[in-house]
Each structure stands twice: as structure tokens, then as C-alpha cells.
Image (cartoon, rainbow, N blue to C red; front, side, top):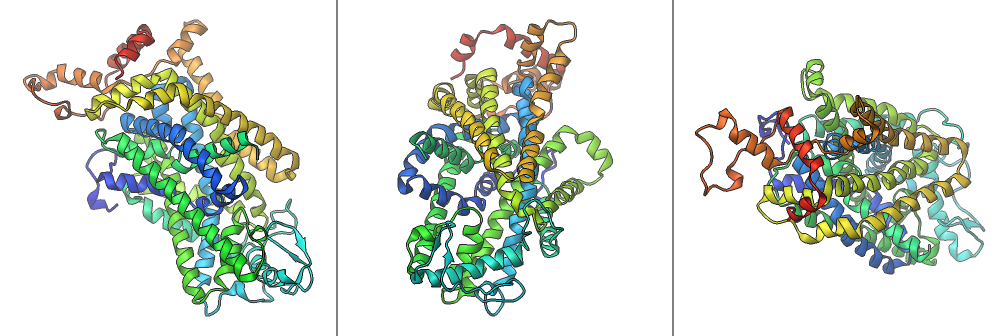
Length: 578
């Protein structure tokens, strides 16, 4: 992503399709693949969980990924403008995606600070978490008779003493030295100076990758199926806005089906590989210390920052394995972090391009402002009590908003705008017919699991409220509200704007009518204009040789297309879709 590779157009674009695919792949390979997916498989039946997981990837995640890539590639806009073009009434769904990315980036990078700490600590002559040290151990590291395993159960058998000793060293190092965790979950306890420094370093790394533009990134059966659906959506980046933003910089003629297949297969294989790595490490640690594997298996970030360091301290060349592992984590986390920040940068740039150009004279300043603001929001997560918020923030930012966003996104694109209409435009641009099964899945397969997924998420939110400690729970709820409040505000704003001199029904019909003008309408407008007199294509020219219009069409074209859209029947649209 060097400046010499940038195009002269007002909006950046990928220099190659490979660059676009690598950026999309990086957005789905976060640290969560290491610390969450293996435990979810273990707790929902082990290898049998892969059956519903792979089915939901094929039937739901892949068609929705195809849909999001198509929307971004066709509209050439971020999630707010893209969804606003297809269904103005639900334009707030796009803003909810952007807000989710903004707040997620502020807490996700906190875990990157832990990784940076461990990475630099791995260069010491002996791994610091393998020994007792008075700096992080106020009590003896060795547990003589009673040990506490990773599942929180106590055991007094002498065969577990070796494992309890190793685990306690890593746990104490992580909680008392790295995190300097406050003993009171209701007290933030002030900032952790070391982590603030690593947070600043992490944002410098992110900015250096962003400032030249986008191209610098390169328990029941039902519950099991719903969890599999959730993991399938997360695996390919659905409802985050990333898979709308990145394709908006891609060539409109890209084969969307091929991109969808590559991203889906690669990300699923990455999840499976991560699961194999963590499972093998868990089994190895259990074998070394001679304990049942159930006493070693762990979930959450402790699997990465407690269990894996414990294993490295028992291996030969422990420093080498630790350096390589945490270096890999840094690469994974930075890739995902860049994807989140790019969604925010793209949205602001698309919405306020003229105003931003007037205030910020250079393009490099926009990512700097976003990084600086997000750095300030992330300070709460590097405080001594900030780690108590992470589990709640993870749920109320990654999961809860996505339950609602996915449902409304499918409603806006597949039903209000129309899956067949979207397929028709894809076919026109690429010169290839859209895959028939995708449109049928949007209409008949996807709605049921997406609806169940939304209700499952709302019920889960109530379950969390039953045992949550007060202030982290309220903090998580506040972030969810800030993410989702844009949806009702967008609905009210659109109805008010279109309700001047109209009845409610008329205003509603105008609000659900797309402002997106298909490419063939734009091309006809330009070919018929005086600018193209004497230069019309001959009959044997292919559609690809006509100019691709990158600017907004005249208002008359938009209004005319909206009138035709309201007057056309769904039957007409369906017949001309494929």
C-alpha cells in the first residue's frame, strides 16, 4: 500500500484482486479464532459441533457474504451509504455497523497490548512467567495441597500439584503483573502505565498501516445450531460492515462468487486450524503434567495468555516458541484492527468528503484523527479494573448488536430492495449469470435461521443480566444502545423527510424505495448525453467496454428510477432478475 501505487481517482481502489482478497481474509482471522472457537467446539460436543457449523456456513454465512460483497462492489460506498441507497428507511443499520466497529476496535486493541507485552518479555533469558517473582507474587506460587484448575474446581490429589504450580505462576504473572488487576471489579483502579504505553505503540503501528489509504491493509440441540450459526457469521465477518467496505474499493467486474468461495473456505480452514492448535496444546499440557484434559481446557483470553505460556515454559527452546507464537498473534490482531478502523474511516470520508477535504488538507490526517479518538476510548480497557469489562463488552458489542443488524440487513437488502434485483445488476456488470441458488437461499433458507438467531441473542442478553455485576453490565448495555440507536433515528428521520405534504403510507413507500440506480440506467444516461454523441459503442462491443460511472447520476435519473421502482410489480422484477 505505497503512495506510488495509488490511483488518481477520488476514491482509492485495490491495485489487484489478490490485494482485495488478502484484506478480506485478514478481517476474519482475529485472536478470537484462537481463544473462543476451540472452547465452543469442546463445550458443544467436540468434533460433532463441526457438522452444524459447516452446514450453517454453507446455507447461511456464505450466501450472506455473497450479498454483502455484492452490495459493496456495486454501490462503491461504505455501509451507511450502501444500505441507505438500497433501503433509505433502514439506513441506520449501516451506521450501527460503523458504531460497532468503532467501539470494538477500542477494546480489541487492548488485547493487542497484552500480546505486545508477552512478545517483548519472551526475549528475556528465562520466560518471566515460569518463575516466582515478588513483583507479581505477594503469596507463594507453589500450592502444597489444594490446587485450582482452569475450570475453577478444587482438587486435593497430589497428582495435580505440578500442574497447579505451573498454572498459578502463569495466572499470577498475567493478572497481577501484566494486567495489575484490581481486586474490586467495581473499581477501575487507575490506569496501568505499562499497558497505556503498549496501547500507544499499538495505535502507532495501526496508523502506519492506514495513513496511505485502504491498500495499505492488505447446550441443547437447538442451542448448538444457534451457536454454530453465530460462529459461522463471525467467521466470515457478516454484519460488521467490513465485507461491504472492502468490496467498495474493488473492481465492479470482479467475480463475486469466486471471492465469496475463497474467503469462506480460507476462513473456515483457519478456524479449524486454530482449533487444532489449541486442542493439541491443551492435550500436550495435560499429558506433561499428567492430569485429565478436562482440568486443563479453558475458555476466554486465559487460553492464550495463561495456558499457552504455561506450555511454553515446559518446552525446550521455550523462548523461541513464545516469540513465534506472540508474533503471529500480533499479525492477526493488527490485521483485524485495521479492518475495523477502515470501516470508520471509509464511512466518514464518504459521508463528509467535501467538508473533510476543506478541514483536513491531507488524506493522511483522517486515519490519524480516528486512531487518536479510539485511543482515548480504549484507555478504560487498560485500567487496572478494565479487564472486568472485556467479557461484557465482547458480548454486547460483538454478539448482541449483530443479532439485530443481521436480521434488519437481510430485510433491507433481500426483501425490500430485492434479492432478484441485486442478482440482475451483478449479472449485468460481470457478464455472467448470478448463481441461481444464492437468490433462492436469500428468499427461502436464510430468513428462518436469521430470525431464530436474533431471538436467541435477545434471550441470551436477558440471561447475562441475571448474574452480571452492576457497572460492567451497565457499561455493556450503554455501548449496545449507542450502537443500535441509529436504527430508530434513521427510520424517524427518513419518514419525517419524506412526509412533507404526504400521508404516512405515501411517506413510507417513498422511504423504502431505493435511491440506488442500476448500472445499465446510468450507462444509458451517459451514452444518450451530448458528451457521448458520435462515440456510441457499436453493436459488437461488450458491456465491459462502456464507461463505468463512478459519480452520482443526475437527480432526474434517480427520481425517474424511483418512480419506475414503485410502479413495477415484484413479478416483473423477479422475471428479469436472472
